[in-house]
Each structure stands twice: as C-alpha cells, then as structure tokens.
Length: 140
Image 1 (tube, helix red, strand yellow):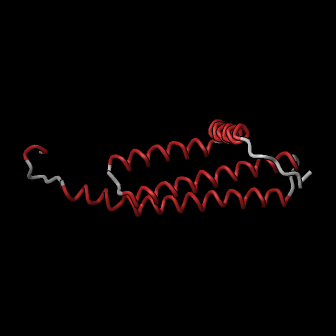
Image 2: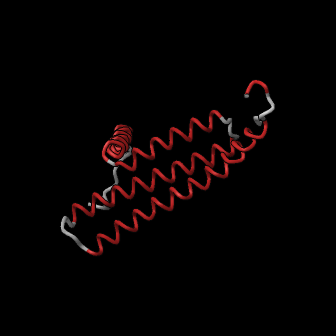
Image 3: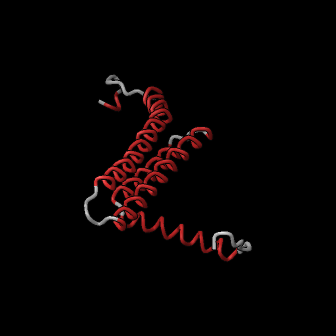
C-alpha cells in the first residue's frame, strides 16, 4: 500500500489546490482569529502601498504575514484533530492546543516587530517632513 508508486497526474495536482483553497475558506469563515488576521493583512498591505515601502521591506512584510497565516492554519488543524481524537477533557490535548496557540502568538509578535521596523520610520519621517505649526495662518 505505501510502496505503490503513483504516476504524476496534473488533474490530481489541480484538485490538491482546490482542497487547499477550501481550507483557506474554511479557516476564514470559521475562525475568529483568522478574520482578525485578514483585516490586519489588508491593513498592512494598504499601508505598504500608501507609504511606498521598498522591495526588501515588502519581502519582510510578506514573510511576516505568511508566517502568521501558516501558524494560524496549523493551530486550527491541530485544534480540529484534537477535538476529534479526544472530545472529552485531556491534559495532554490541552497542552498540545496551548503550544499550538503559542506558535500563533510568537508568529504574530514577530509580525508586529517586522511591521514596527518597516513602518515606524516611514510614519515618523512623514510626520517630520510636514510638521504643523501654530504660527501657520491656515491652521489657526
């Protein structure tokens, strides 16, 4: 059974993308934190476009966003599997879920750090280029 070699099938590869997309849709529809990640992702992308971040900054932002989404996906998959395997309370299942959630927290904290490194200099530079003064007659 495990030693049987299957021939390459383009149709099967396309179907595997379909299943992956179904997983993304399921994640976004059923998980509250995924909805928060989606809003944060859109906000960061818009901020990157508005602030015209550099290519290397986009690379860091894209990896940070991906890191969070991968962590959230694995966390959700682990939770589903744990709930199926052990519907009743189990200390090891609780630990597994806690560790998976910690992975999401670590990924999110890393993404926030990357976002601060990329965006804070842009925002502070923008604010100092056009400082408002009380002596400006337009702003009195």
